[in-house]
Image 1: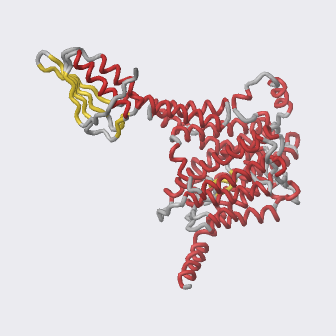
Image 2: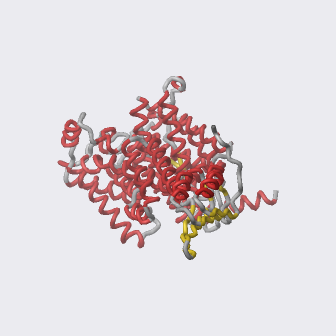
Image 3: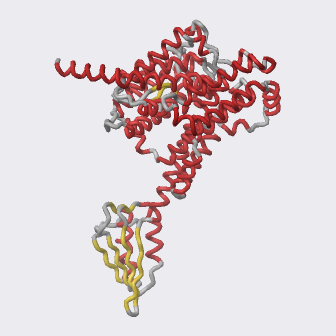
Length: 520
């Protein structure tokens, strides 16, 4: 009982001193992202807000992460937008989200949260970069022209370079051009750059995304008052109905075993959401001054419950989000009460302040998303991968291109396959080292085996042994080897008779002998 009271006292004092203020900071970061991600995903505004509320009110209670904050993720926007196009309805996408949550719960229950350790970091970076490029490309029509048909920039980037409706789309963009949108967008981009470079240091407690939205709202109001001829149209603003729950689309469970695309998208959402969550909590644990470690499998169960509920009530997929979590850590949060309370603020805005939200132009949210996409695909990050060498850069660039040409799941699988190819190629090269030592009138060839020698090195060993001239000496050393494949041992045993015929002295040191099977 005393332990419970001490714990309650700690949470109460931490909330008053740190978490209350941090929750407001996180709310100002999360609200524009909830709205903007709804826009980019092609779903009602309600869906993003619902995901934000569930991420705060439900996921934070089940999770054991003290600092991570969950909500709709920018990394899943392209997947959701493509899923709507592929399945043909929002109710099918929300069913896929619900199934993805159940799959995540199963991953957590069976303690499979560590599977991300088997995915090469180059592939993960390539995936995030491709998502950033797609996210940026989808916002350009909103930012520059006020174009309101985001499905023009559908699933993959290179799909926009088609001739089916190219001229029609260009004509639509031209007809939807708005000078007011252009002014609001460019001024918001410039303001964001100035804020991040100079003003942020002076007023660090205000999040860049929130202050940029406020600036964009003021610019749009100024245009409406002083330049009414180029004012923004009602369709250019966020539209949260007074009864926000009128936008709810419930999943269609009757299509569960009819629509195969639902299962495919559920697996993709589960994979990407799990990957982004585990990467986020790993990153945020490094920012924790108290060095607390989040249990991966417990986090997957929490995220799974959140996604299951989000799908049932028509919300977007949820992940632990590094942008919100980093803001939470920077605001000196101490416990998960900060994440929970930010969900309360989102709920209060939905219920009582929808009129204020409706003053926000879509193009300002697009600016926020372009910044998010840029952070995912930073040129400095791409250059750092390039400097790490071909073994890192080639799988990275192959993953990026494969995702842009195909889709996220196939692109990642191609990236993993290419990484395995590089691994096999490296293993093939690094099976041994060969030294030539001259002793009077004959040469000694010293073959020192690597730490692990697999069957992939088989052809290489056959070739090198065949090139050794007669009347030489060959010494094979396996002292440093932990594992030598049976196929390699068999080659050495078979080479004994060939060495005898060619007058080659063969010495094996710390290389086990095996019986070879003759096939007649």
